[in-house]
Length: 157
Image (cartoon, rainbow, N blue to C red; front, side):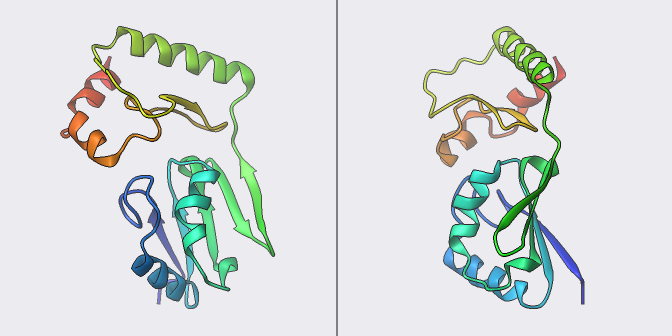
């Protein structure tokens, strides 16, 4: 039997930025009774609370480790959730990254007519760009760049 099982949250345990469905919640609760589980995602702590934790009923949360912002933060349960580390950017690093990101967006040929929420989000240890906004519906995201060519072209530049 494996001692640790690691999952990605978005696109594996749940649809992008969507809550864990009830079947997955039951399966994950059961797994926590027999193994240690870690969940990683690009989302920040609040996303884990909404998507994952709100849909678990396990009394074995001490077997669950959470790694928001692609593992640059680490939470474990010890009677409540505790942040064990966060590899946050300094103020200067954040400002430099945000300036470079805004410049890249201005230079890109993205033609976006509608957004849902913030497009740029500073998560402390990760700065994200969501072209259609942080709350964009999954079907809109899939239509916008179905083969990832827009994202790849911008990344290459």
